[in-house]
Image 1 (cartoon, one colour):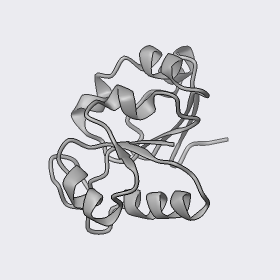
Image 2: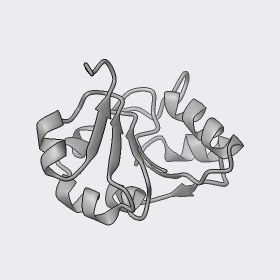
Image 3: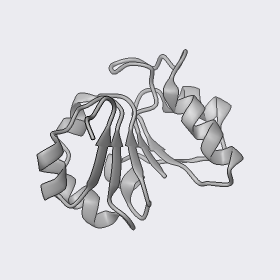
Image 4: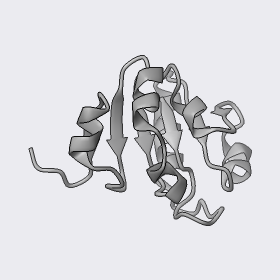
Length: 120
């Protein structure tokens, strides 16, 4: 699993009540692997979860994963080449926890796309 954004909110290293921590904990409990990218909050999360992989590039966090979760809406994520992201994944499955991306654009990029509050 790849995770984009670890902080509670963008432009901070604040991980208090960060949903990323709950997600990471659950994935690890079930024997999964996690790759994560957050250029500012990484050190704080590394103190709690040293066993996951941290990347210096958001594209690396997605590469060779079966699912990608967007947890924090960093502005840089909006500028990602999502075609490149999808083509680097084993399975282009994206869960957008912040409704950052357009559903039609993600489908055009090849993603199975899900977001919070979406209609069925």
